[in-house]
Image (cartoon, rainbow over all chains, first blue to last red):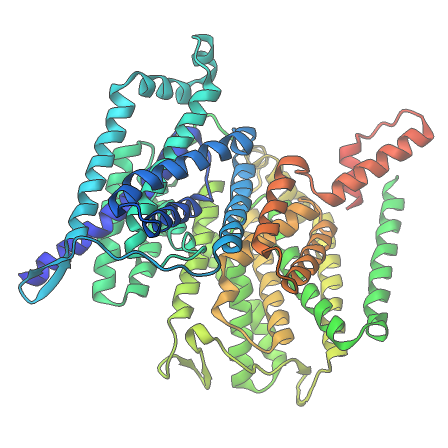
Length: 288
Length: 347
């Protein structure tokens, strides 16, 4: 029984962190048709912002929930203005350029801060389940995932900006005719996606090793989740995070964490193979 | 420039390259010779992606999967056989079979381009994770220990065919590597002028139209992919022969990114460009490695971003375009062939 509770908590943890990691990518990919291969580096920047702010004396909660998304969101805006806006509609070029960007960011952070960095301790401590221990932070992550989900849903469905954003993604020319500036909407959407990714980086900073190349560990998982999730941002990302989080944790429990990931990747490949046109057809309608 | 002159120019280039390969050891010290051997081995890898991406339209983010597989197969086989001859053969055949299996899975499932990128990337990561976790006595194939993160050290280098007691000298290794590169370039040229090559380019240009003309585009793409896998596997064996070592970082994402940079810089849709790109970028990275001011990732990333934004065609096609334009201005008479097409033909 205790074991079942712990396993359930693990699956919850996997699902919540996967959802937090992917939602920014899902927004950028799903709404703007830009494949951001520098996504992992946005996570890394968020983690660095958190650690540096915390070490500078800022309260850890403030640096996780406010500093990290704000900083990465601003970086995202800058990158959109300098790079991404030239690449709309050029799918392959956008992949190549953002891959270059990812190397650039890794190189930049390595140059400034070196190859390793002291992390921050995990706040909140743990609790006892029978003979096992778990961490309150797991539950906090789940809470954050739910809040982000509610926030994104509200933003897209209930606000004027969400309405305009969805209109622009649907038909930019028509929206422009109606007096909307698509350029600005793209910019803000990319900034929001980057900011949410930064938030994920901040929240995962206490749990991961902080290195300039830490993004590589997330990038593949995020992609398969977003791709497996399909066209709708929230429900798609949520179902895929749940499915892959479950597979990953169960695989890790039954074998080793390494093979857990291998099992996750294999099942993702099969999922993409089984549903190739269904997902891509909806994602890239009218595109090359 | 007519086709005949074009072919003449190419033969001269290839002859010049072959002479260069033959004479180079006289003019370089051992260290520099080892460097160019490495560059040539990597160029084989560049050539494999240049072929499948530039002429088959298949953007694989995981070409290192076949490269690494080739390296590991060579290492394991040569340790077990004690003779490199069949090991090299296996290092070509097994990656080709793996490419066939993966390609069948992907192309016959009609997975679209972007997802192909995601799948190849994921496969490479799986290989990395699996090989990385093979430390310990349990993981051995024959007498070869896989070694997990530490890789397989002191792999025997190439020997004279069927004479394991005579290992190749560094000069001979260079001749083999450089010679293989030229031979593969010629082979791919031949494939491209063959019926299969022309169909492959047709599929790249417009898959639907090619299919409507009655070609099985899935089979064509699979063929291109398998050829690419086989070449990458051979590249892996050459790489392991260079360093006498293979480790899981051979499957790393950064190497995958680097191949794409070589091709973007050299010129997509050519075979010569990626080789140039490979040599230039690797020389650059080697030079960066010996100083401390700039980080190589920083420079590589900046180069890739700059090329995608400013010079998306790459160096070699742009250079040829300029050349064609100059000749045109020089002759000052109307020309019937479009410059872009002609630039493609030259390569």
